Length: 462
Ligand code: SF4
Image 1 (cartoon, rainbow, N blue to C red):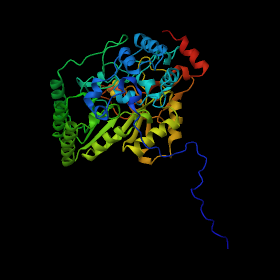
Image 2: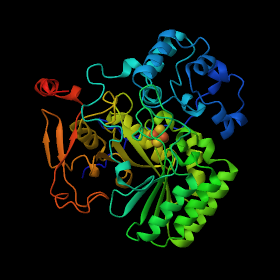
Image 3: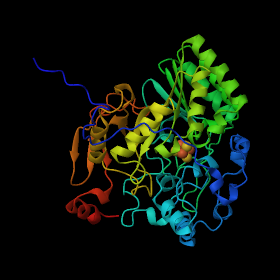
Image 4: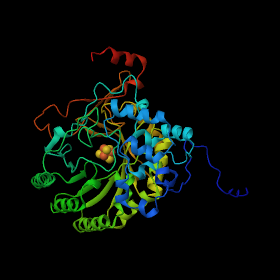
């Protein structure tokens, strides 16, 4: 008889490509910033205080940082704003506080930490971040997903058969450097004159509701922007209640990065009470009401973000999900993606739902990854999280829609062109007999191609 071996305690860990250890969330101390040295917790939790103290320009950043950030950073930032930026600067204190949380106060160390910081890299781009040779892909476009082309009424994109996107507003409480809707969202920059919504919000919303009443095949409405946190609450509540009066609408998803960038908005009593009324109506009518947020790095997931998500769930929202964006220098490693997913799923009740590949907008090449890199990342993150919480990495292919990164039909790795198919017509293809037979291209960043591919692109007429 063989003796049963006593298990050793704790069980010896196997060597794995990713080691999971539970990490509890922390709120970095905002008093490390000279400009917020005396800010109280009550002020910090106040949404209005956060909005008033957003950082919008170099002068405000200097006042916040004192002498902690070296001059070269400001010069680099201003050069980017002059020559490259497609989004203007708007950073809530909550977001700034998650940048370089452990950098100390020594200016050289703080500056290095800011340069390297994943949140800074997409929320506060500097000139030296950008790709020097191919800052934009030759096929990049301002409205790279052609959402406006598919508007059935102003702001209502009907791209998929059963789903629509309702752009309620063209502003956000924060502006992300890589914003897909850079064509419309935010203030104009030196490089980009923004388009404007022309209808008054009330007329636009009436037209959207009218379209949805007349189109019973649409069952799912993404209520977005911009960010719904910038829609005055009574207006948003009234729109949602009218949506739920349409009995063919069965899913409503509220898109708000503010849940993570300005969680203070989502814990204000007037918003929580309103959300409870909306969630109660959704439950009574059997409508799936969810919040979709946009978190790209574990550093952004703090106790306040978890509180905002739990508050929404407590008042009856069915689910809070994350749609992150995959970006080099921010999160495009298996460890960064898994750390973020475990922070969301394990500590904040936010389901890691999607990672989108960064879209082909101008000046975004330094953030974008190739399709094969995205496929490798998808492979690397399988098996660690519960299956239902393992995010899909998706490519939003122009004129097609979201596709899992392994779903391509053909892939020329040398030229970095992948070809995709689809099984439905978008809103502008009802008369197009070829729509379902065609192959739709998507382009890898040229800097990721082998030399022969890079030469081919360089030889193309401009
Ligand atoms: S929150 Fe969304 S819509 Fe607003 S700037 Fe960021 S990516 Fe664009």
